[in-house]
Image 1 (cartoon, rainbow, N blue to C red):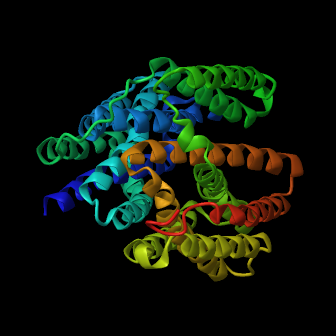
Image 2: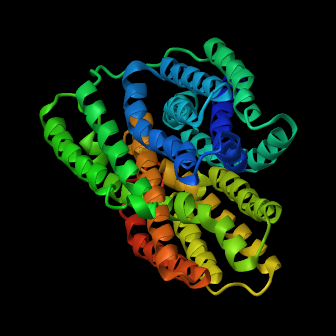
Length: 441
């Protein structure tokens, strides 16, 4: 029974992270108006969270494996709560952006450390437990917009941050009581490598964010150049150090390279382009904000249903069949979207189809290759999350630049959807380079 309570406890953290991202998006117009600032400056309230999330994942994954799951997870919870508390009392937009960064440092560590905890708690059914995490996150995606909208309209935008404190505190107490100290890997933390990883990813993400603003594109070259320099220094350092923060066995061997590349494409579609669907619905179909929120619901429900079924039967299905089926459905859904369904009902059906597709992919993609190095489950999850987040950020930047350049929103989105569909088709061979099922290489 205790391990199921542990699963519920770490799931609360994942739901909190999902709610935080979506509720802030709902509150964004109100926050912007409250501080009376430009959209360019206010946009960093969202961008800085994404940046911190991406930079934190691979570092916390390694720290969790070396320092222990319990302490890492609890520190992440404390950081998330502290960031939320500070956001709730932020006196100006500049401090809010800074406090969102603190919040992201905690939020970015939830998934890697939580996967490590679950992998230890469910050694005999690790694939099912890790796969079921794919069902947890969409719950937050459903709750977030609705809860955020109610809180903002009833209590103001600061309430979306206040709510994280008592819920996070309950999860923290439960973690202290339920979690046991985990087995640690006898390695040192590569602090220089961690700094270079965080600096290179942050610089790259900053450059991508600046590319989204027309008057800052030339300035974006500076952080991009800094990122490439830091990456060069990182590779040189990691090859020379005894215990690198980025395990090149998790990056460079064929199965892991295939998994990370596939997850980059996955991030381009699921984290990136799919986040622009509300813009597509407003600009092409003339939907209002409420209708856009409802449009995302079939996708989340489809994700929950398909990921739950896939997780429960993953030992029978293996990894490849759900990923191939989900990839095929994703391609079909994107192509349907590119030809602008004639009715709103058809659009809802397509979003449900895409939800089923993502739900089928996620448990298999989350588990693939973990069995090769189960003791490094958190490290693998952190690196995988990093590739997904970078793919999402890159695709959003490219898509928004394309929409701006083309001018015609319908034509721009058609090009985007077809482009991502082609990328997914090209990624199918990568699935066959990963283990076929639990226990097989």
